Image (cartoon, rainbow, N blue to C red; front, side, top):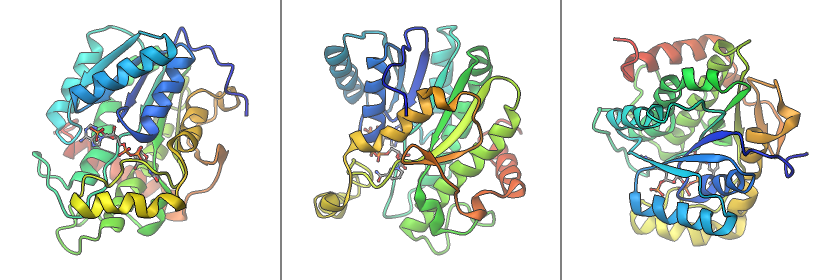
Amino acid sequence: MEIENNNLTDKVCMVTGATSGIGQVTAHALAEMGAELFLVCRNRDKGEHTAAEIKNRTGNDRITLLIGDLASLAEVRHIAQSFLKHEKPLNILLNNAGVLNFKQQITVDGHEEMFAVNHLAHFLLTNLLLDQIRAGAPSRIVNVASGAHMLIKGINFDDLNFDENFRTLKVYGHSKLANILFNRELAKRMHDCGVTVNALHPGNIATGLGMQNGWVGKLLQPLMKPFLQSPEKGARTSIYACVSPELEGVTGRYFSHCQETQPKEWATSDETALQLWEISEKLSGIVK
Ligand SMILES: NC(=O)c1ccc[n+]([C@@H]2O[C@H](COP(=O)([O-])OP(=O)(O)OC[C@H]3O[C@@H](n4cnc5c(N)ncnc54)[C@H](OP(=O)(O)O)[C@@H]3O)[C@@H](O)[C@H]2O)c1
């Protein structure tokens, strides 16, 4: 794997969920390689703290915050518009932000929050930025999915909010299955325009994921920590997918441990991927 010597000084990268865990480490690595960074964060203070830390450690001060909550489709549109105002091509989009809720939470738009943030927000953001991404070709879209997609055997089209039978890991896995199916359909649509689209599982990593779930969430992390890897290890596959020369022209794949691997067969259905795409277009307001 040859990724360390990349010079990204002429590249513009956007990272969602850069204030913690895997996204923060990846953003740091991209800055280290000289990229201009746009960091999508919902919390301005955390965003400023992250940007200051990256600037201090790397000397790279080409960092712009795009503030917005991915749990609101209006804010996703605002994030995209804020980027468009800069009139820049986008070379690397890392769709990384994610949430894991122990209880059903419904967003301002009426969607279950894990599906809304993990899938729908990134579906909309990516679609709104496609012209800039095409303009940045050769460019890369990287979707941070998860091995948790294996916990549920299909998209719950009849009840996307899981009003019936909400089970944390199933609903989280469902949103991550949506990431892989989105990846599949998007790769097809980007075929032949110099834009590659790949998904990945980062490993089982000690991050802030799930920590916002009250005292149970906070307790879980120290209990699980001995079985989890560091965010630095967790970011390796994301960094690999974003910048490795080995992956030039490689698209529509799924990676784990910096190697291509196969997701479960229900994550490889073209029919389901298209059906999810069409529903997501309606739910996100791209198509009325
Ligand atoms: N950790 C693992 O073992 C593991 C395994 C497989 C896949 N993943 C995936 O890896 C990705 C990164 O997660 P992580 O483990 O690094 O978790 P994390 O430390 O909790 O980081 C999640 C990031 O997403 C941001 N975020 C969450 N909800 C948001 C919202 N509504 N609007 C804007 N930003 C939001 C968080 O912002 P705040 O800082 O403001 O909370 C944070 O920056 C996720 O897609 C996750 O599903 C993780």
